Length: 151
Image: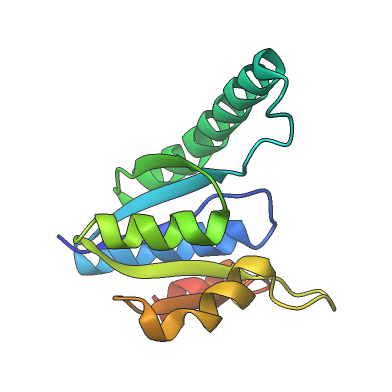
């Protein structure tokens, strides 16, 4: 089964990427993997603090995942899987893509403010020539109706 990999982060554009991935998976008989990356700890010398921060990050990720997963199950009949990695986000996304041969498309949401599409879109498009799969970039300001139309 081909899976759509979508990145769960704190950006607003993440919502449209989630919607797109779920709708495409539903229409094509695919699956969805939601990947969240916990960035490296800045408090490596404070082991106890780092562990607490890591656990809080995992709890937050699970809470956000459950919101998206419930919508995907209820509205698109897709049961997504969650993957959590730790490290530099771009490197971890690339490594996850390479580690799972069922992943067929990476779906990213693009920011709409003046700062550009966002760091993940910027960095991953620079690496797109060496990725084993295509990247779909979903504009962050597309309406639900437009997403339904194009998926």
